Image 1 (tube, rainbow, N blue to C red):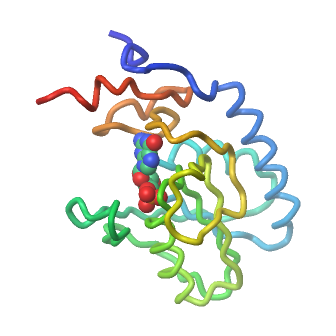
Image 2 (cartoon, protein in one colour):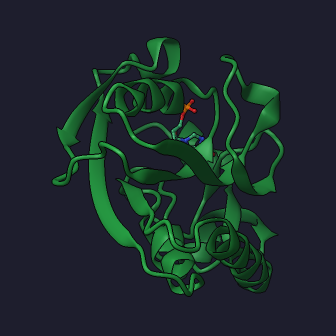
Amino acid sequence: MSLYNDAESILITKEMIADRVRELGAELSRQYRDKNPLMICVLKGSVVFFSDLIRAMDIPLEIEFMAISSYGNSIRSSGEVKVVKDTDKSLENRHVILVEDIIDTGLTLSYIKNMLERRAPASLKICALLDKPDRLQVDIEADYVGFKIPNKFVIGYGLDYAQKYRNMPDVCVLNPKIYNRQP
Ligand code: 5GP
C-alpha cells in the first residue's frame, strides 16, 4: 500500500523543495564563506532537509547532531525538552546554524536556542524548513525559512506521524482520519 494513501494532499512537491533548498544553500554559502560554520541537525525530523541542505552549500563546514525528546506530553504546553543526544564538539566561538524541520508553537526551538546560546557561540542562527506562523506562541523567528505553511499537520521529507512517512519525498497534509482513528 502506498504511503500516499494516508495523505490528504501534497502541499509542497519535491521539485519545489529542491528549488528552495538550492536557494537556501546558495544564500548560506554566501553568508558563511570563510566562517567554517558548524551545522547542527536536530534529529530526527530534520535529517532529510539537513542532508540536502549541506550538499547545496559549496563552502567548508562541519556537521553535528542533537536528539531531543519531550518530557511526557508536556512539549506542547511548556516546550520543555530533554537532550537525548548532545553535540560532540564545543560551540564556543563557532558560527552555529541550527537546522530544524518545522516551527509550530516555537517552544521547542526557543528552549534549544536558549540552551545553545549559553555555550558562547560566535553566532547562532536558525534555519527551518517549515514555519507555521499562525501557531506561534513565543517571540522567536527563524533566520532562514524554507516555506511558510498553513496550520495543518504535515508529513514527509523527514516529518513523521507515529514514526511513519519520513521517507515520502514531498511534504503532504496528513489525512485527519489517520490521527482521529481509535487504536
Ligand atoms: P513546537 O515546539 O514549535 O510547537 O514544535 C516543534 C516540533 O513539533 C517539530 O520539531 C516537530 O517535531 C513537531 N511538529 C509540529 N508541527 C508538526 C507537523 O505539522 N507535522 C509533524 N510531523 N511534526 C510537527
